[in-house]
Image 1 (cartoon, chains in turn green, yellow):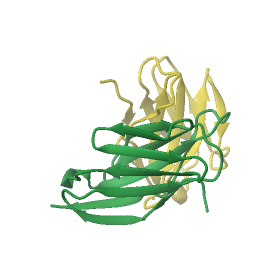
Image 2 (cartoon, chains in turn orange, brown; image 1 turned 90 degrees about the horizontal axis):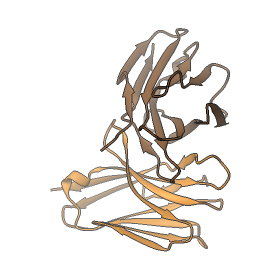
Image 3 (cartoon, helix red, strand yellow; image 1 turned 90 degrees about the vertical axis):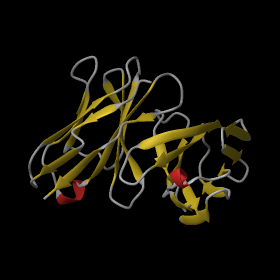
Image 4 (tube, chains in turn purple, brown; image 1 turned 120 degrees about the vertical axis):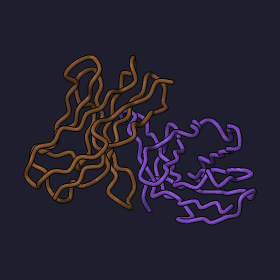
Length: 112
Length: 112
């Protein structure tokens, strides 16, 4: 598998439900970041979690990181139609100039 | 809130032509990046730039590509002789001494 793989590839839920997206990676990391991309648009930074952190919250977002399993999850609570987008995890590796390695992304569809 | 800007939003060019994609990173940021995203695929790292020189480049970033910071505000990506497979969305990103990278809205390059 490649660095930064998300699952599921696509997720369809009803407004008000929670959405959980998972990301796995292969190498040791400095931090892991989640981004959102609306169709054909730019990448919006959502949240960053460092390798020494296990959980982080920001509004309706909750991110967890398990470095022993090399995995992370992004939970969006009480989803809204406006949350419809693609979500990507990106890992930053020590001593590599800060470049981000992105996963394939999860396409989230929230139906009103 | 400061943001990364990119011009043009869409560039159409003929195969073999040179293109220059322009970015204005966030003021006072020190690290600059170019990424690309072929339609339907994940975001791929191209090059990182710090202290007026390339700090890292990917296999994609071959001799046809170059970057420049011609003045204190612009950061450009040049493709000398475009190929059909260069068609993609190109994102510029910047960061300060922290870890979060801020992305621009992208330039959609179409090579005919």
